[in-house]
Image (cartoon, rainbow, N blue to C red):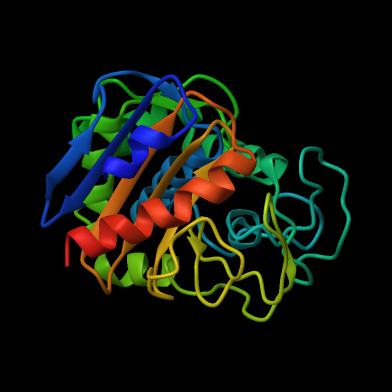
Length: 266
């Protein structure tokens, strides 16, 4: 974790989580950061809770014609990256889409009768004690949180209590396998594997996790300079938040940082 001290940022916070507790941390654990697309992990988990409760069905129509809740959460509904323009038939391409996650949240709100930020708070944040986390904007990119809160969430992702093990296993394996697409910041991936809201490392290269992260690693990174990964093979999770937007510095700094975390906690 000492490598984080060399990051070209003003503020950074990080935590390594294993066995339900923080094993190591760096920086201010209570500083609130914008999460950008790490928000999608929180949104996806709230949708898993909604599905478990029967508030939504995976195959119910949502989004463009022919699309379902499952298509939206797996970035295969056909929406463009940041608009509701339809660029492909559902299920044919992996088009990473903030707009798709916004429609996903609207679908949960419509089906449940509860505004999505409230559904997220009641279904995920409050049960996990994440009192410093809130969805203040888009369900795809508008949450703010702290490293301490995300460490609680990482612990939940290592041993789910809010959803069944069966559903979580489905969420962290490939949905609509074999689809190609672009991983933002890292270019074309063939295939661009994704679960139910969770980005899957699999054999992707280049990638924002470390070279030592197993193919089973899942998580997300955000354009605000944030990431969260869980590596089930290593029994570790890592949260890192910074106050500098994603760019070449992160492409260079993040993988060796993750490799060092894995090496230090074998």
